Each structure stands twice: as C-alpha cells, then as structure tokens.
Length: 379
Ligand code: NDP
Ligand code: MG
Image (tube, rainbow, N blue to C red; front, side, top):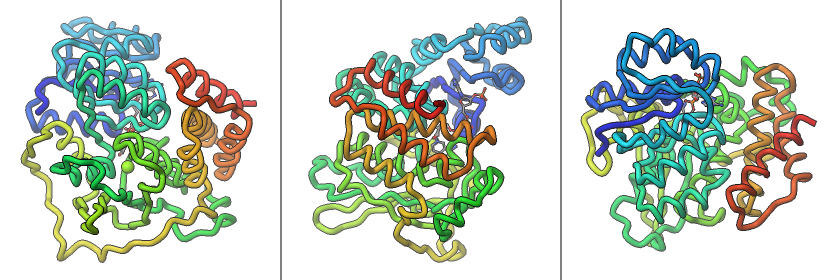
C-alpha cells in the first residue's frame, strides 16, 4: 500500500487522475514533474505541497520558480531533474505518467531505489522491457501496471503462483474511432477525427495511437515484457464497450476477466492500494444497464500498425525501440499537421526496414536505436 508518491507527468491525463486518487486516499505527494505546463503545475504545487517540482523545459522552470518563491517547494529544471524526482527518499511509489521513452531513465533510477513503480508510461516497457524487468527483479522493486488492460491481467493473475499455468492473455481493444472502416476509408480521416476516442479521454499521443491501433501493438509488447511471454501467448480482441478490460486463459481452460466502468482512476487506485483494495466512491458497474458486451477480431489490413508492432515483438532486441521511436516522431508530425494518417505506419515501416536491430541490447543500444529511428522519420 502506497503512502507517499512521486508523479512523473502530473499535469497530463493520468497525472491529474492520480492526484484525484491521491486526494481521495489522503496520500502524501513528494515530487511532481511536467514538461512546460507552468500554470497547472503551480496549482498542483499549491494544493499538494510536494518537496520537489520539476519542469523539464528550463525556461518554464525559471518561470515556475518565480511564481513559487513564497512556498517551500524546490523547483528544478531539465531532464536530469526527472531522476531526482523519481528517487526522492520519502516516496515509496513512483507513478510514471510521462508520455514517451523519456520515462526510461527515471524509471530505472526509481527501480534501483526499490520504489514501487505504478507504470502508465508503456513506451518505457516497449523500448527496454527486458532491462526494466531484470532491474526490478534484481532490486526487488514491484512494478504494478496502471494501463487498464495490464492492470486487469495483473488482477487476474493474483493467486497464480506458477506462471506456466497461464496459457495466454487476451487483451481487449476498443477499436478506436475508425473501427469497421477499410484501409482507404481510414486514410481520409483527419486529426480531429483521430482525436475523438469513443470511450476514453486521454492525452493526444495515446489517442492517436488508439486510432492507428499502435496503442494495442505497444500493449501487446508491454504484456509480453511484464509477464515474460511470447507473442503467441498474447492475443487481441476488439471489444467496443471497454468494460471487459482484459482476460487470462489458464491451461485448464478457465478464463478469468476483470470488468469495470472505463475509468482510469480504478487501475490507478489499485496500483496504490495493491495488494489491498480501497473504497471507490464512483458509480459501480451495473451489468443490467451496461450495453451488450461484444467481441470481434482486429483488422490488421486496415490498421497496419498492429501488425508492425507484432513483427517487432517477434524480432526482439532493439526492434521495439525502433518501432516506438519512429512512432513517437511520426505521431508528433501528425499532431503538427505535417503528415497524413497513413504516413504514420509508412514512416514506422521505413524506420524498421532501415535501422539495424541489435539483439540482447544494453541501455546505450536502445537509446541509439531510438535516436536512429527518429532520425529516419525526419529524413
Ligand atoms: P498526457 O499527454 O496527457 O500527459 C503527459 C505528461 O507528461 C504531462 O504531464 C506532460 O507535461 C509530460 N510530458 C510530456 N512530454 C514530456 C517530456 N518530453 N519530458 C517530460 N515530461 C513530458 O499523456 P497521458 O496522461 O495520456 O499518458 C501518459 C502515459 O500513460 C503514456 O505513456 C500513455 O501511453 C499512458 N497511458 C495513458 C492512459 C490514459 O488514459 N491517458 C491510459 C493508459 C496508459 P506538460 O503538461 O508540461 O506537457
Ligand atoms: Mg490501455
């Protein structure tokens, strides 16, 4: 059970919902970080009084320091300060809610300090899952997933002492805003269309990833790394209602599922209270009024990003870091109106075809793969 937390990415969608949960649970907040959201960070610091507040944008950090001169909070700027926020001695739990691979180094630093990692930042596990899981095993640090599918699986494997009993994981996928369209129809969709997710309100990068189905591809890799499984042991099923959050099939044929309303505060709260369960003041799931639960196969022709992610997962090594780096850069260009929707899989495929894969990578190999993939997209 967490008592004092640090949040990396506190001004974002997961970060703000984590602060809601922290307030409800009466958790102490030791450190908060964001990139450049000065005003929102000032509000959060005044309310939660952390010892450290970080803005990775140096100019924004200077502005914040002036605004917070009357408080006891120490304001830091730059990327190295993320590591300081991730390792503050008084925090027992670090919520990794930054978007992108930038979360990797602070996550590794927090693991070394044996913090519980409440992990939302999936890009970290996609790029360096083996390194992160090995480091957590070596340090004895707990990694409790916040991503709703992985939290569902985590809950369904409680009580499973022998992981060989798991036959496969079944990740559910809402299908995103373009579900049911052909490849050509999807290609005509705009940024505004892509940002309209049917069930979840999230940050812009993951919302675009949901529209391309890259999010589900990243989640397949995340699940493989968290539970050390092969691609054949992780399948994807479309479930439009986002009520069954994922399932675990055991070798005796039993299938366990976790259900709930689509509200990220549920998995966030569980990551804080684990191994106990807290009280949730929100409306519970009502099976009699919720829509009928349906399931369908994903369309890898209309949504090639899912296939690209599965191919990278099979190849292993730095292939997933290349996939992720190229995707982060391509989504950034798409959100800046520089490229079209289908350019995202096209640029990811080009990076995968041109950047060489290193097997059994060290951290430097992963960082280099990420750099080369981004460069390939910007070429
Ligand atoms: P948001 O875009 O809403 O928030 C991102 C946070 O990270 C903000 O605090 C932002 O600060 C900070 N940030 C952005 N870029 C950088 C950077 N380069 N360096 C340091 N900090 C940075 O994202 P979400 O909350 O939606 O997602 C966060 C993570 O959680 C992602 O990995 C996502 O895949 C995962 N996730 C999210 C879910 C959701 O429901 N939102 C569900 C499951 C997983 P600033 O405000 O200053 O830009
Ligand atoms: Mg998810």
